[in-house]
Structures are given as structure tokens and as C-alpha cells.
Length: 222
Image (cartoon, rainbow, N blue to C red; front, side, top):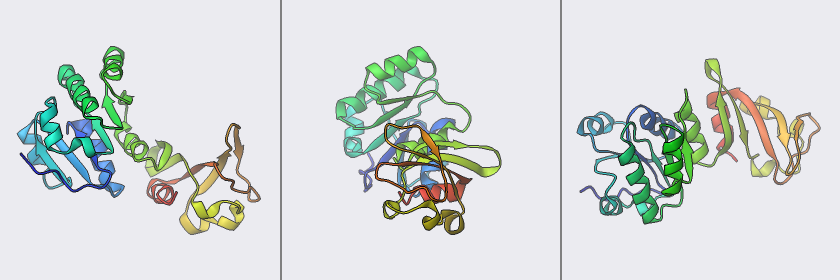
């Protein structure tokens, strides 16, 4: 059995099929170490040169997951495809290990309800580009993420700490980072249009638009 990988606030992806692989790749692009787990030797081989760590293992076995150190991971994403039983048993094993943040892919509404009852904190119903969106949400850098056509994205994110008390004009993020703040969400208030004189306050959320890579880099400053 492989040694526990030395990850900091580790992120593990269980099931390296189409969905799990998309999440894992997006996490890597965001600069995170990723432990990939799959029972398929073929998939493990396919991902061995692309992820930080890859292990072939039965994820339904709690002892196996403990030996891999999954109980010390901050986030685990269960992306198992068509095997509903394996999906549910994996979530149950992770829950029994006390993993604090479990995300699980559901094949339908009933499957989703079962996952919630067995310990999943977040149930995902995949759509186009969902792997990319989940990668941003699970790391906590963005509150929401929508990627449009042609590499353009709109996100809801926290402002950089040094922006509090400054106006948007003073921050000059468009010229410095190539992004545009289109709205500001105050606590317990509706989204307001962003104006040059808008002052960033503690607890604000920003609605930011721009090229995906630039938006990702900006949100990582939050």
C-alpha cells in the first residue's frame, strides 16, 4: 500500500473517470497538490504522470482509506461514475473517518439523497464544465464560478485584504490585473453596481468578470 502523501490541507479525488479527472486537472491548474484514487489499474496508469500522487485502491474500504491518510485531508471529492453502491459506500467510509468536507457526484435525485444521508456535505449533479466549477468552489477561493464561451468567466469572490477602505478607482484592478468588477454584494443587501467611487468594505463580495486565467489569479489573492 502506498505511503500517505505529504499534502498540506490535502485534496483527494476518488474516481478518475471523466468527471473526477476534470476536477483533478482543474485543481492542478489552480496550483493544488492532488491525490487521485481509482480501483482501475488502467486509469491509475493514465493519470500517474499527471497528478501529484495516484493510488490504485478500493475506496469502499475504510481501513484502506485510513492507511492512505484520507482522515487528515481537508477535502475529498467522490467522482465515482456508474457504480452507485461503490459511491455510497465510499462516502460512508469517508464520513466514518471524519473527513470534514466531502463532495460527491450523484447520478440522480435519489442517489443524491442517499449520499447526503450517508455523510456527503455537498452533492454534485454534473453538467457541462461542472468539474471546473467544483474545483474553484471546493478550494474556497471563489464563492461562485461560471465560465462562458471563449475563455471568459464571471465569479463571486472575496476582495484582497488590502482593498478594504479603498475605492475601486484606487484599486485600479482593470489596469493592474485585466479584470472588471461589475458588482459589489454587501452583507444582507442586494448586489450593487460597481462604480469608480465604490468603497470596498469588510465582508463585501465582488462580482468579477474577465478572461478565465486572469479571474482565477485575481481570486487567488483574496
